[in-house]
Image (cartoon, rainbow, N blue to C red; front, side, top):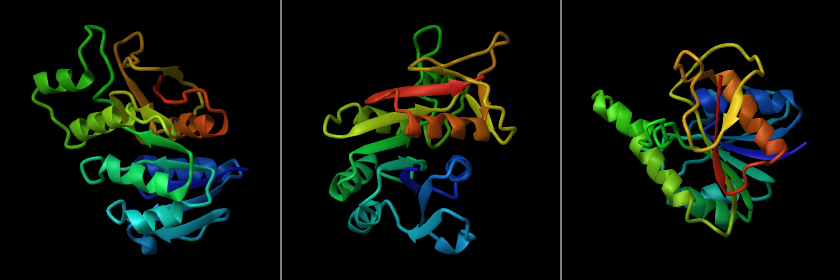
Length: 204
């Protein structure tokens, strides 16, 4: 059992990470800006915290084995989160950073391809900048995780591939995964770290 502090526990990805981790018997402290949104669950402790209050966030994170941050990087500052992790004394942290920074077959980023189509999701550029900031960090055991181009509610199949900095596509050119399977990949990394100070991705 691992003591996990989960920032963003009510989000699309975060809520699935919470469910996956609890199902495996881990103890999870679910951090949310509004604790009233969370119903009691076995193995879960709910704490109210915001990434904008570094002092309080650090206090809540203290004592855990690992921090998992699944937040909207247009609403959270990666430097504040890293500051809170450092102050907490927790040495290991995983960050969900979006698909925009993944490299496509022509050598350009997925963010560049989206921009060509006039698509600019509000979180993509900030998430790419968060990854760039993480890559400067040498005093923490960090891991960054990117979803594929499409991530949506679906089945928990346990069948997916892992990659590193390149966007994964299937034989039909589709790059996708369910929230449920993406959560498996993240909790797998919590349990058996394979990407220390690296970014990885998971897709069908």
